[in-house]
Image 1 (cartoon, helix red, strand yellow):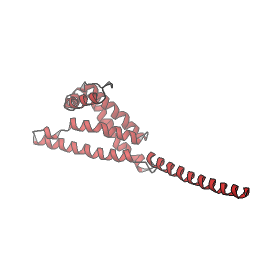
Image 2 (image 1 turned 180 degrees about the horizontal axis):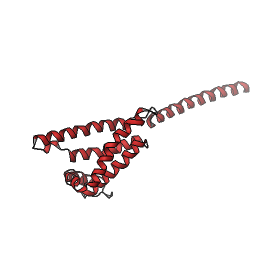
Image 3 (image 1 turned 60 degrees about the vertical axis):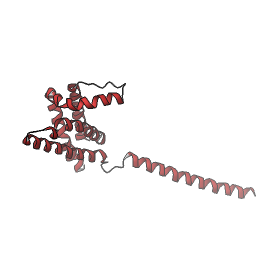
Image 4 (image 1 turned 120 degrees about the vertical axis):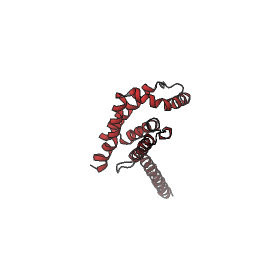
Length: 176
């Protein structure tokens, strides 16, 4: 078992379990902060995908985000679909960070410094998630496997064509 599987993924996932549980316990407080972001993102999402049932209530969106974070964190920590779960967590972290740590809106210097620190902490976690999302754990990824399979097929096709030409020459030689 690698150190990544044993320690790093669960450590990376732990903040999302704690954050998701906190968001579920304090939905209304999180929803008030999220409203600034949801008021901009939801109309754009509804316009982009008009047939999708996209909720517009910030509290509902906070609950959905919290649930996604808890499920994806559990999957990442246990090694179940780690690349997908890291991608889901990364996608959920962006609006969470923009809504929860908008240091540029703070006027109090201490509050601004605290929010800036949290913003950059989340940016660092996002970097870790992006690394986890592309980590193949020492195994080739799907794109590599597809390229390898295509190369194998081309090589086999060339060999079959070469064998067919040889057999045709031999058959022609036997006929004459």
